[in-house]
Length: 320
Image (cartoon, rainbow, N blue to C red; front, side):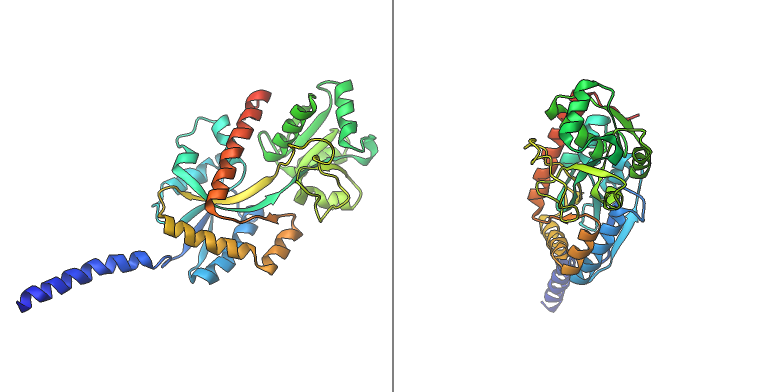
């Protein structure tokens, strides 16, 4: 009988071990995989929020850049990892435009799910102060007088700044000639030189030039005016009620991850976004904290896939 009891206790202990380990989440570092290079806005965002999350969870939050192929490299890497909650992916609008631009080896909406919507960065449209264009209405008028001859630059084909103007052009029923650049900086340089009519950039990139008077902002695509540029009207104010458009950053995770672990991570990042020091630092670079439950971000992703899919198809946008 003693032997039987001992065997039962050993078996119970063996079963309790894994169960206990499952309850203790996380019990090792959490990795935030970036779809972009280190040192940029995604790196800043991941490290800023990750510092608070690490304190909350009692485990390090490691930032791991996996740039390349318009977020596809990082996405495939995360999908190759266990669905245990220890690997999350920080993405931007390309996550929702890629399905309309490429033949993907994965289904981003089925195999991945929203974890938390971190921040929004509204794009703004700028012109050279010497151009004579003072409002978006002026640009629309010029475009109707010279169909297809009015040029605008952006950070590249199918970027959020590019698609913002394409959507505005659809709303205004005008044709603009898009000039893609490899990033915000060269687009702004061309605008400063007067070689393009306008440039669509994130508020972060264009802010210093607008403040210095080198560029003039004629519209911002957020719902409300930016506290950084309160004098710049929104496109909604200018008669385009559907023109709430933002570049955004958020975390997604393997769809098979246990729900309780998703809840733990979501709560930790949501709390980080509410910290006064985090909000102050985000505001300084034009990032607007969002937060909220995973379901809210998942719904946002679905809406973005649908909206940009229509724009890409309507305007015949392709990526080489």
